Length: 281
Image 1 (cartoon, rainbow, N blue to C red):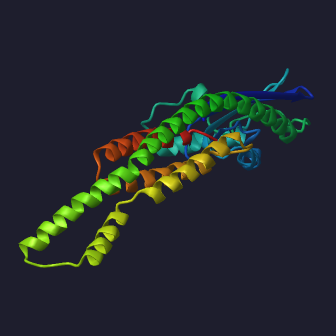
Image 2 (tube, rainbow, N blue to C red; image 1 turned 180 degrees about the horizontal axis):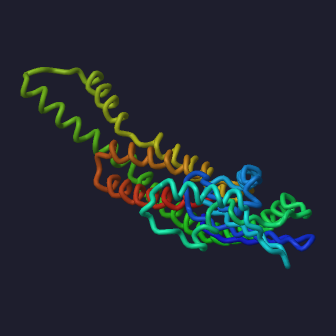
């Protein structure tokens, strides 16, 4: 799911800001960009994010500021960089001060007494709360879309259900004619009870009652998920796959034009549903 959320916390002249940006993703992928002062807490930050979110690609950008402070140059580290650059090639142009000062660890923030980890936790908690509010608004819109697609799937399944018995009877009649013609060509005879048994066996294989029954159960469970609390995206993803499986079986069994068209409508709605639920938390 997409969304944005920000948070800030300050104490003892120190301020930490956190900006979260989320885009759609089937799993959870956390990308954190932290300044050197907050880098030691990256593992704890990612663990806190995973406690709250389950899906999406999340970018975490954090800033650390100290009012009235001045950065200090780490001279030993700067000298080491200069030696390494010199050893890399004498014909290289000398680096600018801007480039040297941007190297990792060259500029150090003053030692701070403020609890940076606590400030980061507080800012992150606020950002996560705002992100969840933003994602919840999108979730409501996606819920309406998915509900409409479930309505379309149910309408297509109802058409298939209405045609199921007449289609099976028509298929049995066509099968009987073909079987009798084949027996006549081969000059063979089949007693009526045996003929009826064979016709019943083959026509039962083309019946879609079980597929439609399971489809109704899956649709009902999908609607229940939308009314439940907590993450439902993975559950709906699984249900949409199972519904598509039933729709594909229904299409493969269909020996009737009306049933085939209903299966096409059903698969179209369920394909779109599967795409949408992958965006849900």
